[in-house]
Length: 174
Image 1 (cartoon, rainbow, N blue to C red):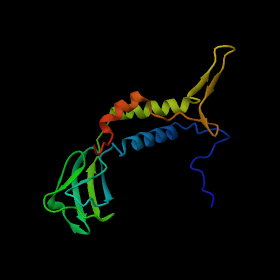
Image 2: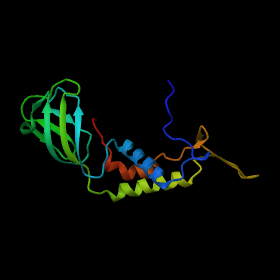
Image 3: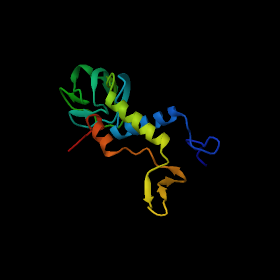
Image 4: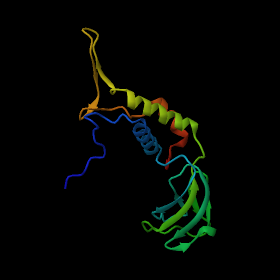
């Protein structure tokens, strides 16, 4: 079976709609940070049990834990939650079963102007740039851009943008 394309060319060219590039940049930032960041939302998550007292949820700003079950048993009263997304059982451990923990969590930032600024910058760069320069001549002039299948590569995050996003990026483990 041939998979349908995710994006199709419009009139033989890449999309020019600014919302397309804002959506693409937002997806890039969220993928890099590994969670949605903003806005504040209530979301149900299904997680694999850790078999230990602690369990990590994909969030960097937990406002509250609304509900929590482990293998179908309500354990909300037995769980402490940290703002950084660590759920700790007061007694016992989480099950070891995949998909056995179901939580509803209120999380995310109400706003994040610095993140919005990065998204706007990435979108503007992607919408207006023909791609990353990979070759540049001085005489008789010339320039070459990085492409994949003829399309410009212009959504990668710059190191300065990654530095701005660092406080929002999930960092789990050592």
